[in-house]
Length: 177
Image (cartoon, rainbow, N blue to C red):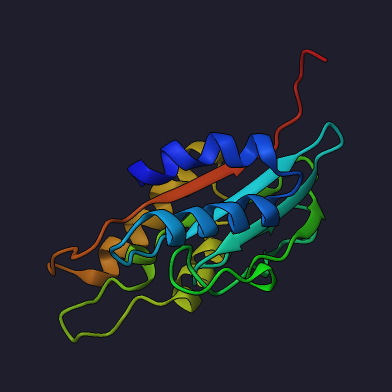
């Protein structure tokens, strides 16, 4: 993470798309670090009309909870983490979508989906997606805590063995406008 904090600003400055930003990060990680490391990453650019250009590296897919349609849309991104493969532009393709008021973009680390209960059963991306759908009517302030409560209830008293992060961003209409 620290190395990407240093490499990210120049990549943004030098590149014109999220996929190219990830490509440059991947190249710099592979070129400058002798030890192999891999990092999941998601880059998104939001314009004034709420269009999103995005690209991802790693196994966890971002999700958009569509308020008007009442469904969860999985954003397709690359499966290869930064630093885990050769310098190949096809690994980091750009995608595009648009947000509407009330939509939520949800990101998580693999520590969420890999969390195990006492029976060594993994929480899984499918269970995380189901929790997103089950809590879709939650107000913004309660949404992420509800997802965490579901994960905590699943794991029971077993310990977390990896970092866990959930980020949820909702597009709300400015009532002052």
